[in-house]
Length: 426
Image (tube, rainbow, N blue to C red):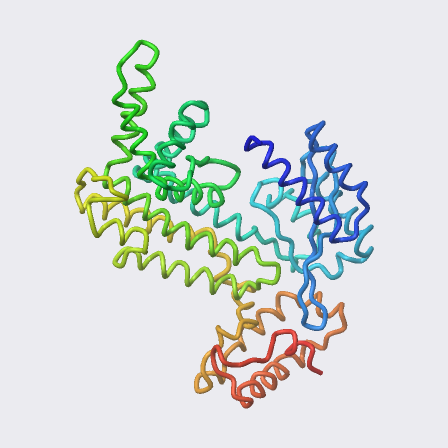
């Protein structure tokens, strides 16, 4: 099965699984399949994240076709799904809306978030954090010369073998002769960087010996009119692939993307909190920043020798590699900080209260969280009053709760009272 067909079938099976798991009628599957297969129709999927008695859950609410991909049509589609599947008064309980970063969604004057927020100024508009991470990575590599060189190499190898069954068969033969698993060059681009680039890098680095061996064979073939171009391509790719600087930069990217991929998975967990997301961001940035002075596992192995997978690499200047490495790491950390800047201020920062890892030790806890609680009360005041909450009691209740937790023996990482138990307590 070809890659596009496989990806389509994968999506169809995934949709069928969700429909069955959520108890939806299978006519929904036929409807979704028809809209994807026979026409280009914009559709909005709506998920709801809610908390009841301290328990967080995420539900797939529905999918709605939109007549036009504009803010008005999308907002109407969301409202229709919510009113038919959740409640007619869902807006009175709305505290935040998460979308991608497209202007139609986040536009200040006429975006979907603005339309759904209406006169409820306390409703937060949050740009999907996993999407932000993709954009931060894309921003960082866009202007890096070595990253562009690696991307061109991986894309070129993918195209070289994808368009020629003869070359694929020949490369597989080299894998068999080397007693290696056949890892064909993989696609680099796509709708998102992080799912595609790791696979392309992994296949290149693990199949390096076979790929280089095959490129050497093709670059040394007898010249004929029809093979001149292909021979030149193979020779060009071979020179780049054997460049020590390029190979080590591939290893650096592999280490960085491994950390970024783990971060992306954490950000996409259905129960992740803003506090946990910020904690994961900080720790990932710290690890990547450390790679400037202490290389990651993949790069460390490549720096120890000039031979990689039995292939002698062309020498490169150490200072040139260090500059490319440091430039990428600095750019990525700066882009992450910029893309996630709003999580370090205002009510989003105050949400760190719900993560016990953010709590200080007992001797510095006297005033901890007081300002954050005040921030939350101030921001959500209209919503709290509408729900009948006596907001004047909240500061004292916060102090009581905090004191009881510390008295019970709380310390970072050791307190075993779950978030759900804490919020469900009378």
